[in-house]
Image (cartoon, rainbow, N blue to C red; front, side, top):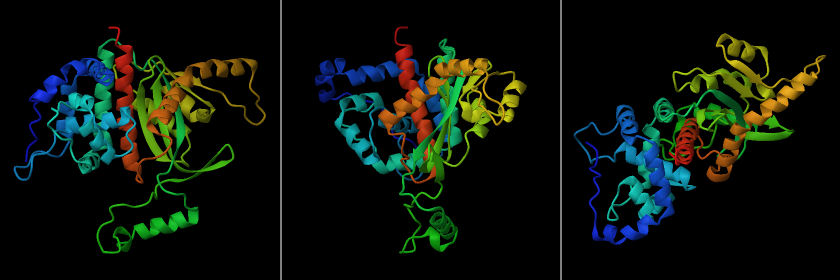
Length: 353
């Protein structure tokens, strides 16, 4: 089995729509995106990390780059489901042009998108995001001089369960009987058992937590990690810093709110010769000085950039709620969202050039 030949053959329908395509804003937006990225280098990474297309048996598979572009369209155009994505690709001229399909070509089946996600790994997606950010740096953008780190709560894709009921369900899932449905077949769909409970502002929350670092100059998302909601923010600062190293240039300063205050993070930054931009927090017997209060206000004016990313993805991608009942799938979804967000932002920043 190899990959399908997706070379575009123009039809009379394509030619008749040529004039209208020139005035299509969606096409212009995606052409701007194509200008800022070298897709061949992304495709090379995909081919090395995608385990399909090497067998001589079976039908030809869709090229992984085409499937990745489909999932990017899903992020950019707020498409909630894979069946709807299939419908939109079949319906929209701009989508087919971006994917390199003629009007006669049909979209991959919605189940193909799901299988594509299932075959992908977090490590492969991180390599692709690293390659993309490296390309932006090569175009002269300083992407990690200063970084802002924060976390947000994400609602579970399933209805909440009490801790007691959740533990029972986890114990049941670990048994042979808990892995099959009533017909004895492997479970295809299951509820979320990896989310858990936490309290924020006196409100109980059941779900996950997304930890992210964002470049303070251009607003690129440099790293993202998904955990159960009960995980504290502070231990993830070193992980986000390490995930933000996409160029040979060192990170100069890290900005973060009071949730990351503490000796371990201060020592980590000092050890790595990174300037400390963590807001200070009053402790028992130690009130904030005037200097520390003023410093906190100055830091808050810089670290807003990560909250801006959270706000935009909340508004346009419904990132406040998990799409899938499994942590790994939601982590991959966040990494795809990171790629889509960075591509769109780069197309705006590099547009004048």
